[in-house]
Structure formats: C-alpha cells, structure tokens
Length: 334
Image 1: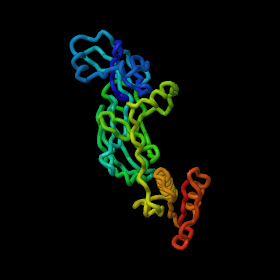
Image 2: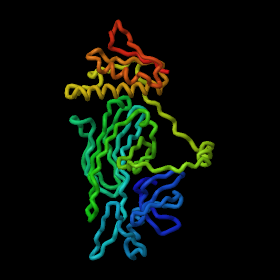
Image 3: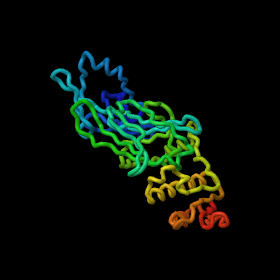
C-alpha cells in the first residue's frame, strides 16, 4: 500500500484514500468530508480498478460520499445526475532505481488521480537545463534519465514544476514547485519500495506536507522491535570513497564555468568540498588534501572557516608548499 491508493475498510463500509504511512504498521485514510482516520494495514484492502468498473454499473451503491471540502473537488456527470468522487490528491515522487553499482535510473511517479502538465530541470538561476516535460497521466510514471553514482556531486539542484488538471468541475489546486538538492549522508540511506514501479529505490516525495506530524513514543514497542530477529535491516550503502587529493579548481568541476557568476562558482566549489569531506569521514579516511589555489584567498578562507572547530577535524594545515605554495590544505581527520 502506498500514499494515493484507494482502499476499503474490512470491518466497515467506508472507502477512502491513503494520505500517510504511519508507524506501527498503520496508515491514515481520508474518507468522506475530508475526515482522516488511522487504521491498521490489515484492516484495509485495496480497491481494484476492475472491481470499481463492475460494481459501479447496474445497481447504485447504497452509500455515497459527499465531495471533499478541503481537497481537489470533482464531479462526473451521467445524464442529469452527478456523483461525487474521492480523489487521490497526494502521491508524487522522484525515484532513483539502481541499475547496477554504478548507475541509477531516475523516474517521476504520479500516484494521484490528477493529470500533471510538468517540467523538470536542473541547475540554479539563471542557468537551468531542461530534463523532461509533458503531461504525467494519473497512476503512471516516466523515466527521465540514467545518472552515474560517481557524478553525484555534479547532479545539481532538481526543480520540479507542475499544474493539477482534471476534465471536471473542481476546486483549483495551487501549482507545485519543488526543489531537491541531495546530500550524500541522507540520499543513500533512503531506500523504499517505489509505488507503481514496485522496485526498491531511493525515493523522495515531491508533494509531502512541510508540517511534521508528532510521533507517539512507545518504549515497549521500540524495545520489542530492537530484539525482533525477523526484522532485517537494510545494509548501509557508503558514499564513494574520494581520492586522497581533491582539486577544487572550477575548470575541474564543470565545463560550463564560463557562463557562471563568481558566486555560483564559489557555491559549487564549497558544495563539492563539503560532500567530498563527508565521504572521506564516512569511509574512515585519515586525511584528505583539498587543492583550492591561491587566487584572492576567498575559497581558502571559506574552507578554513568551515574546518575550524569541526567535530571530525583533528587539525588542518597548508599542504605541499613546494608544489602548491599556499594553494592546498591538508585535513587530518579524527
């Protein structure tokens, strides 16, 4: 079961849409009038599309739902009558499916009942590069591209923009704009079953609510899970180990530096530094050298500022002065 799936309660006549996945094998289901109730997964069953077609023809169901008031509202017309619909309003994802240990396939997934005219780009203003566009149909997915794990630091910031459309009367939904800039420390730990694809993937929800739902702490159940031998933990995937020395000269990081401003170049250099340093710490390296050049000293000063007092830094110093002068810094890692 995934967010956006339509379900029926086993011990009741209610039907609704899954809006959240809750702890302790529970889900949140939105039924009529926008009411949301928590239920055990075992107490809900998916509504098959074929079942809907069969049972919606012939006799009229004895129970009907009022239109949702706080979500996208739609009515379909049959003759002179109208029948309210419950819509799957949540369930947009970006997924990265491993092809092998070097490549990932990037997908966009629409597990809602809305058609989505969309655009996906990568970069920062004013240098965005378009990756995909079109109309993402309800309950479908598209493959965007294949990406290399070794180029993770150069992926950049993904921007997803979309409108919500249905050929029906509805309450207008606000356009969606979502920016994603991934970090090594969180990206490779986030592995889930991707809706519709039904494959393990690095999964990120594009239409997740910003508000954080309070989680009820139940110590007894936490302890029980800790000692549950049947529960298998996903193996931790470490980021790729960087080389002993990392060259931060802008021409080594991108071929498009001629179109970038000084601020954008510095941002790319600092982002690369942070990710390479985090990868070095994660892989248990003793030391790493960052080649930043002399220039006006801005990049060197920024690196030293971020290294100063860092919990994983034993000390740092100018490295290989005979070769780089003051253009390289060696970091000793705790």
